[in-house]
Image (cartoon, helix red, strand yellow):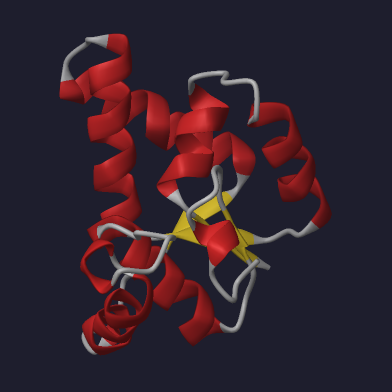
Length: 131
């Protein structure tokens, strides 16, 4: 089981070069889940990349998740406490080189609260204790 971050979803759906390696990770660690916050971030990012309306990208993302068997799970109300702790340690304002943003902090928090690996693209999470 693993939590899938928006960076991984964007790489997969936008067919970025890292997408193949991420797809291989998904095959090794089923089942997978993500959050509504990740969905928001993924749709917004893909709208910027593809320059199409939100409703079209939302359909594309939901279709992808269904085919990839990635569930959307709610975020527990007190997850913000863990996300704030993550921000304090690794956030953009902390001085740490990971410089995690809002969405990153919540993805990190969801993964550690669930006790599962985080699937992501890039170097930001690689500079944390999740690497």
